[in-house]
Image (cartoon, rainbow, N blue to C red; front, side, top):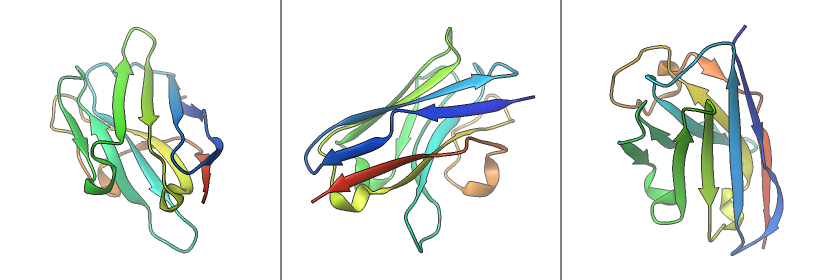
Length: 126
């Protein structure tokens, strides 16, 4: 059974930093895109960042460019999201995702990721 388990969320002041981790188990995703989405209360889930299987290609939503960095350690089957200069509007539940299709450009849409974690809450106080 495939599982994606996020950790690292919490409460932080605006301007602070957090590092999210996502540990995958049940299969390896070293050839598959992985990424992060988020969902704030009353809003739809939105794309945050994604990375190719090798880690060579990264994609970011415009609202996190220059502040967030996505990376992966395939030896550990783990995905990361370093979040710096956090803003109040970054408050949301953050979800780790994995694509079942290998060897492709990381997708940006919810529907193209088959595997989802349970989410971790990030709260930024103003």
